[in-house]
Image 1: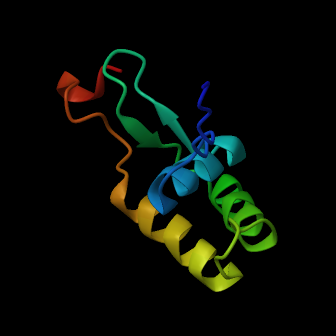
Image 2 (image 1 turned 180 degrees about the vertical axis):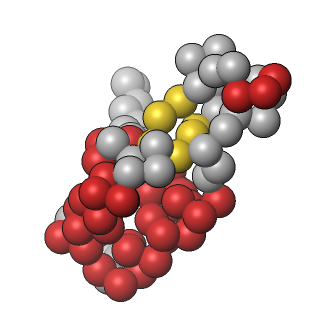
Length: 89
């Protein structure tokens, strides 16, 4: 008998969801060489990410929890890649 499995959700954690929201808003980007997330330091993009989180939280998560997660992830991301020397990337 053929067994089917349910598909896994595309984003499995709140942190992953928050990173996706921040990328979608243009608030963060990846170092092309090493893949580290970097903050663009754009206050307008930060505000867009917070708005996106508030208006479209994941299922079962309140708007306050979603915005708090986006803020927490944003605070954990620096504006330089830890592997690049002297900010070369």
